[in-house]
Length: 103
Image 1: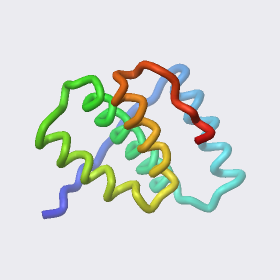
Image 2 (image 1 turned 180 degrees about the vertical axis):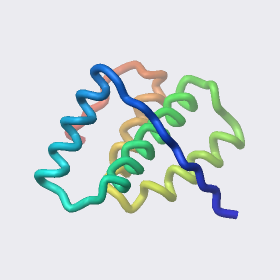
Image 3 (image 1 turned 30 degrees about the vertical axis):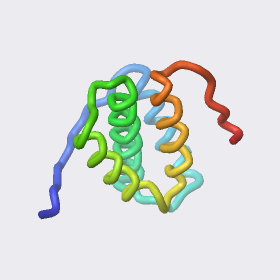
Image 4 (image 1 turned 45 degrees about the vertical axis):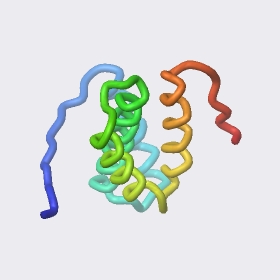
């Protein structure tokens, strides 16, 4: 069964300022609908946080394996795939060490 969530959020302060700047850039330079931009922002955050929680050991075993499969399915054919791989490498080392962003 396909899951669906409707999410409403209020942004304030510096985060609202950054979001406004992002909106302006998209309005000037992109044909992507606002809803798609927001979905992509949420997707990026969810993937990063789950990867971080796995890396620091808060999520493991079968649960982590299942999450990794979902993350792979969502991001493998997108520009996010390289970022997912970098995040996994970083958090696998418990958030320590250097990650070569040029790799």
